[in-house]
Image (cartoon, rainbow, N blue to C red):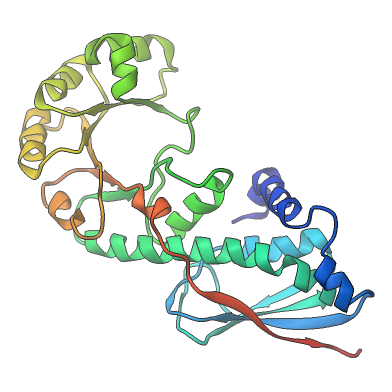
Length: 285
């Protein structure tokens, strides 16, 4: 994550996370370490995986104390094995103790998403299909989780509701039909915005094509239905498949030739990666 993005967007969420964990003081740390003392602690990987979020991890500590230093021996996107010494963090021991849980929460979550995404992305190698995430992210974690998807080899769908037009079932119901919804979106949205329509059956596919949708999302269709939908679309719109996409079924979907496949599981179902801060010690200088 670059420094501009960090300062403009991520910092406010990191500060909120720290305020959630330290609402007035860290009673435990202040009990055992009432005054400043310089120390260092090691960041150790406890299982194999793809690391993501090192910049966020470091920022937790530098928000608490700008003098905290992290020396990294790996980079985001690296595959690391169990037991790898990934970094050494040096600073006020009180800061190292108070920031530990928040920093690890970010790094474990983001690395878990990157690792899971990477395992899914590998299944699409050699196909024309691009792997996308969704907006099914943890509240106030989207910037971090979508970054982790990219580190893992996936791509981002729209970031938020201001980022693009996606007409889903309830939008279509509100407008009175697929054609009406697309017409309303074309009349309202800036001309640079692509219009995507979620369809659930072949009649809706035909309506979306006739209305001039740019992208047609085939939602929760069977492989046979998707194959017929792709035949009907015949290159007149990009195709996206969505709905319960996992590692177990994604190769079947990609074999149909869809342009994109989106999976909420990348962010909502990825297990964390086990990472710890260990071997804290004081430094005499």
